Amino acid sequence: MPSRDFKRTDRVGAELRREIGLLVHAAVRDHGLPSCSVSDVEVSRDLDFAAVWVTALLPGQSAAVVKALNTLAGEFRRALSRSMRLRRVPELRFKYDDSVDKGERIDALLRDAGEAAAPADDES
Image 1: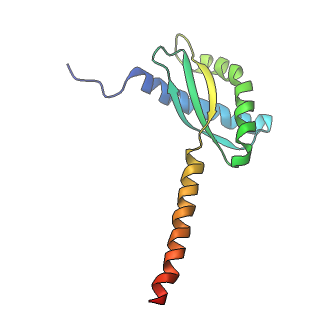
Image 2 (image 1 turned 180 degrees about the vertical axis):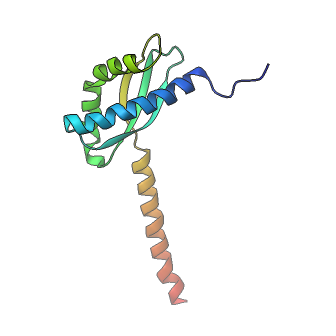
Image 3 (image 1 turned 45 degrees about the vertical axis):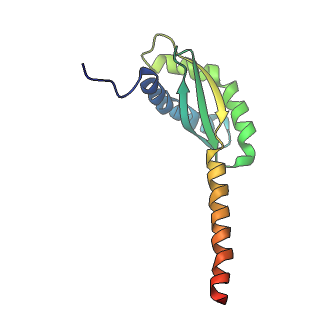
């Protein structure tokens, strides 16, 4: 019997990410939320909970984005129950994904280090 490469939670998470991404995009437009996107969805083994990781276009608005999306979580869950073929749609918990911010910070540090090293090479 061939082994499965993906667990059911991974498949459900990928489908939820796609569907929630569309719902968040509509919420940004309809509710005037700050611009944000869904970066990942982690579903619990029993499919009762889903951690939805979001990134904000402006890092200063991250708390407002997460608060607004958690307020709309029930509405999103009802919409998902109509669009997805799941017996039970997981409870959504929105969290801020700071990996983009960390990546930008590392990029800036590397850029600064490269600029600092360049004048030292010119002097020798």
